[in-house]
Image 1 (cartoon, rainbow over the protein chains, first blue to last red):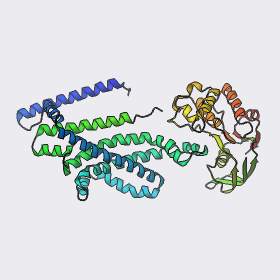
Image 2: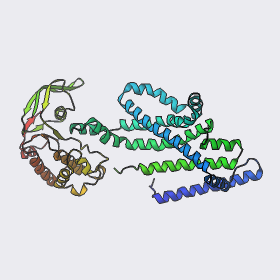
Image 3: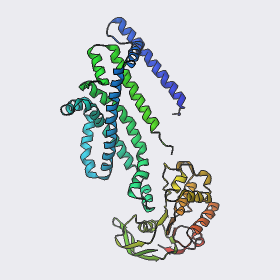
Length: 251
Length: 183
């Protein structure tokens, strides 16, 4: 397959979006005409979205959700990296953690939200769920990167008298960085999905999830779509911020 | 100074080195010869402390610099960053320049040829001020011109220091003034 230039890929991506917006427009028009079901038009969704943007409480909800999900994500990165280090150096830890990680990966997020809600306060539940869902991803990516480290490079550093802490920071950390970066990019999307799901189910005041739940209760189709659009845009924005801030170094 | 007394080492059930003793005084220069599998690399690993002997003792006096059989350059660092990892950057730049890599200092290991990587590995070892230099096939993949430059630099930097060379070419050993040790 031939590699494409960045502008060409961007144009193709934009054309795909236009195509699907057209499909949405046609489907919604047809559905609304036949009164089979109501689907808001893209223009109605955009209008509701911009109306939201003019409201202070909307931005407060966005800020609150972003903060909660970022907190959950960062906790997952810290715990995931720490567990990966333990796991790479201890077969006992690896054996003990394996069934727990399988459980977290296979149990639906809604089940975890309901169970966690029994004990965890609503305001911190989205952070905890994001952390729980993302942590195994970070751990597996980091552990794979740690296991792929060429031990000959570590030996080289030892022979030249490099200290253990310097080997960790100057040799191992840069070698695991690409794997951790990939895990973070994947994990950030999962953090959003699971965090917003937790907000929708447990409804913390002044959050995106609560806005979505409120719109659904009020049978406000445009608002449901507008809030969903907000979630998608925020997820894309955060992912791109992460990619820009943490650029892969040429090698 | 390197002192090995009654050293034995085996990989599993396979003995590689049996009751081996050698004393290399400070400033001594030896070249290890031997067929593949004779234990040359194992001997170097024992001297550098990467392996512990099953029996006997190994003691070394001073800092060690090594050119490994493989280049072992860090893929995420440029050639200059690799060479200056354990030595001042000014020294690293000088070594690279002497070995004809001055114009390639900002390249990454993936962007240079095998011969250039070999010279970079040699520059990294030689740039460090050490008491003991261990060079495992340092001229592998180099042409005559580069071998001559490398040889001159090694002679200059290791004067009065302990040198252990592994090579298949006796002429290289002679030019560096090494005694021959057959395994």
